Image: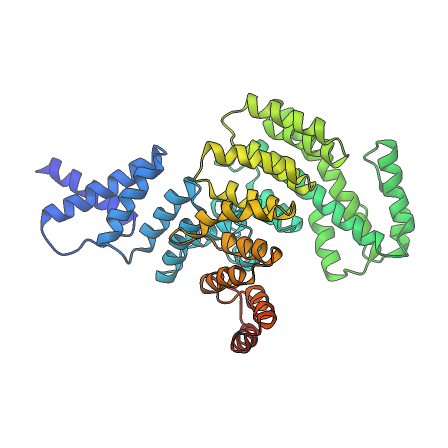
Length: 449
């Protein structure tokens, strides 16, 4: 009897951990739910994501109002790189109840499918409301640089430093990228001011000499600004600058401190993690930034062979090509990625982006048709097929795909505007009026939070 009680309690723990409320009924029914819940959890832990998906769907057939189950189904789909079904699962979970982890996972997936406008307010909310939860921040951490928000990225990776669950070398090298991007933004702001020549010359002199010391204009900065202090750290300087964004001396100081943090974090990482693949990846990115793209690619290819347990390296190389607008090379790489896993929506998404940039509209349309014909077809596929069709003069298909996209994302003003132009060009007055009303209705409406 005691043994049965222990087994029953373990089953109840597994079920309630998933948020399942047991239905009234026979003990056999309860045992079946318990077993399925345990199977689902075990499959996730074994990384058998297809099996986990099947188990969660069985559970949802009996417990359709469990946001936890919908979230776990989304995770199983996400790990199979089925982004759009995962997005629907996370959205369904959030309609039932707000769960911070489902919210973060949804934001992450929106970044993956290029829905940056949808992800942006969600990422801001996570930093505003959940910044103390390091595990939650770890889910969305890469998104902040993707959104070109290096200051937020610095805040996130600072919190992830030395967290036992997060790789230390990944945290530090991601912090390096964030500081580097921040430094570039600060310098661009200085370059836009006619009164910043002395500060820019100090930075350029340090670059030309290969020195990390760009502080030669500190005396001038001290005279020019009542807020400037040479012993401020990055966080202190940032806080002051945010209160006085027109202060060029503080902007110069942040440029210098950002560059110094890059060198500091690289040195720490090289000492602590001399064999880190992320250091190699950063070196490759530096070479690419200097215009040595072939050398950078060679380092990536070497790292891909040396660290096969890090499949993200191949995707990162493709993203590097995209950043450098090397669309043909990126297309080939994402093609290899998709060939290895034909269900990889992320790779297909990036292939579509590359083909659009290369103006391969004729080839893109048959590539996208299987994706738009799916149940819960990806929004990006509808939008890209509409764009390719419009470029080829096929206004009918473009309208059809944008109408499908409109149903999927009714608050997206860009979709309404594109449809309005197409309706106007085809003489559809009712369509023009409808989209005009839709645009007015979305004005001032908050993006999904």
